[in-house]
Amino acid sequence: MALSRDWMYENNGGTCVAIAGADYCVVAADTRLSIGYSIYTRDYSKICKLTEKCVLASSGFQGDIKALQKNLAAKHLIYQHQHNKQMSCPAMAQLLSNTLYFKRFFPYYAFNVLGGLDNEGKGCVFTYDAVGSYERVGYSAQGSGSTLVMPILDNQLKSPSPLLLPARDAVTPLSEADAVDMVKDVFASATERDIYTGDKLEIVILNASGVRREFMDLRKD
Amino acid sequence: MKLDTTGLESFAPLHGGMDDLHGELWAPPSFDLPVCADFDGFQKNAIQMVKPAKGTTTLAFVFKEGIIVAAESRTSMGGYVASQNVKKIVEINPHMIATVAGGAADCIFWHRNLGVKCRLYELENKRRISVAGASKLLTNMLYSYLGMELSVGTMIAGWDEMGPSLYYVDSEGGRLKGSRFSVGSGSPYAYAVLDNGYRYDMPLGEAAELARRAIYHATFRDGASGGVAIVYHVGPDGWKKLSGDDVKELHDKYYPAVQVPAEQEMMQITPL
Image: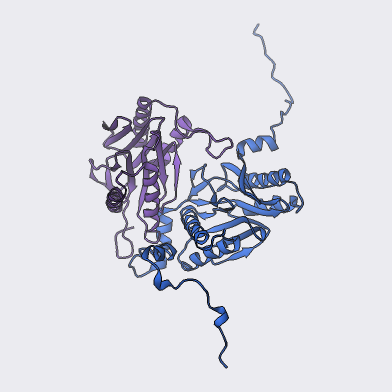
């Protein structure tokens, strides 16, 4: 649908993936920004670092996403002034959910994946819908290529449901290097079959020693 | 003749003396609204575009030992299964639980809000809120948004001074007290099994098994229901989670695969 006074959204496409490990979290997104069949830029980062332990990757309408990131950064700054510490990842997850829901009647067109380390240093990934419904999971994909990526991740990483009694852990048994390799493989596959995914892959890895960024080239067609 | 209404005056403190925080906590949240010519059309298009996660079979019934509440755990965004592990039974306080059906974000947000209001009530009145009161608070909150396409179909179950109470509340303004409810797209299937096997004086184990079976049958026939069948019990001491079983395993338990004997068997032919 074209932009008009009654419809102010665009879909810029792209795919975001996150995998949580025992002591790390990998968050990745491609760097293509499209409108319709045109590619506007091959070098746009969809990943935003919110705190030292928490990173947000979002796909959808990048205009709304930019506003959402600024909103969260501002709320985080106020929190830091009031509490003299940074927000934990689960706290940021709840804040993001509320921020999204407060625009329930004029939604942020953003499909988010929040990744980071929780208070115990374990990896955590939170996946959202556009109006703020969220869930802590071991891995997730959002965006135009998510329906291509999720089945692969389910096949490789699916663990017993946390709702079963007795409860079981939701983190993957993969090592950090294996998780990064899996993410690269998964994006290479998604790029083949999704026109909105490609160009370059940005991978952010959070672990006890800090935050690290890697890049990989993807197909540019 | 002027009616004497002095008996109806409440003894609650006047709102003039309150600070901003209190007013903020009790007031319904305020939302940004888009400025456009056709608000309803915009809402319909926006909901279709973002396809918020919806959840789908829940049930609850009252029996002699309390209330059994059960749900499955799938959320779908359009035709895509967004999650197989969503919690659709939310705990409001140690004595009251509520189910989530309809829009996941809507239900979870309003239930969290309800939890806040219930806690404020406890602090102000030095006693736990009744289920009737909690469901009324929720209905009143949702009623302000009538016509704005919120999608909430919830049941509030708890044990208060009146005994076990079950209320159904929805975003269309409905609030019903009852003893047996099922909500969601899989509810017809769940009702069939539930109504067939229900007796008021069932023992706890049989009641839990009835609920589990009803959810299983709903997941079997309804594409939007699946995942894990969860059963909770609300007794005089509060709620307790009884079980969480993957419906795939329940299928194998209720309807184990039968080995069909082959009518004819192929013989190995040795070459000459």
